[in-house]
Length: 291
Image 1 (cartoon, rainbow, N blue to C red):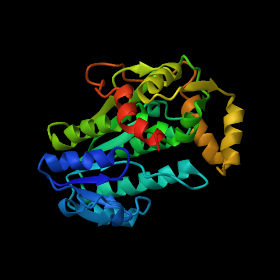
Image 2: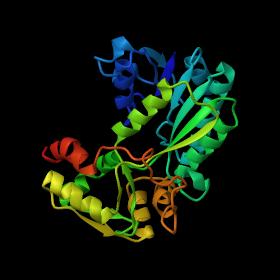
Image 3: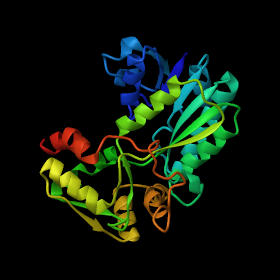
Image 4: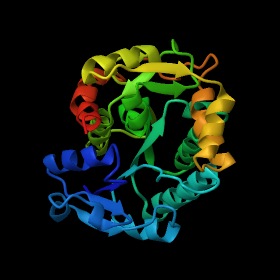
């Protein structure tokens, strides 16, 4: 079984690749810069250099692949949804040209809306593109990554994080390692077919107020969360150099899931994963805040 993994140094990928190695496989990893791979990993993987926005490169890099873990690459252009569309075109072409049998796609809670959820709309487009191929496809509808807090290190050190969601709004929070574990089981198991939506919800739904209390207890940093107006956060992002389209896409991931949204997949034993925010914060966040 030849498994290919995109973004192998990403939040999920850097957990997934070692899991596949421990399972006895030699995964193919698609990277733009092989030097970013950990030295201990590189001898045990097959390296394919490819830009995920480049259709020809992705097709070439996935020849002979039986199963593919696809993550839309980070977007950095003026129009993030256009970047997602380019990535979708590349993966669809690769799946069709190489007759890849199984694809596990890292999507998000909210992609079921299809429109109105900011950058998540780009993931919805990739879901639709993959669904139109002949491959068996699993969409991992992931909750809010614990690792998103790493983007707020300065704010956490200062003791205040700003959000646009109501502070009592519950949502699924999940550890990237747990997403990798779900992905690995899907990639290694050939006994599924068709279109599957697998939610990955973490151990419990958390409000921002509850999450702040957990982080405070785990790190020793007294953290409060403040709700701000949409326009205030948009202006802050624009002042930081984001394009208007990019700021709208980032903001939309919160505002689009704010009014009456409920995930398509309810929380069940199948969607619930074990790592708590407290354990992750103590292991990962606390040492970074101490620097």
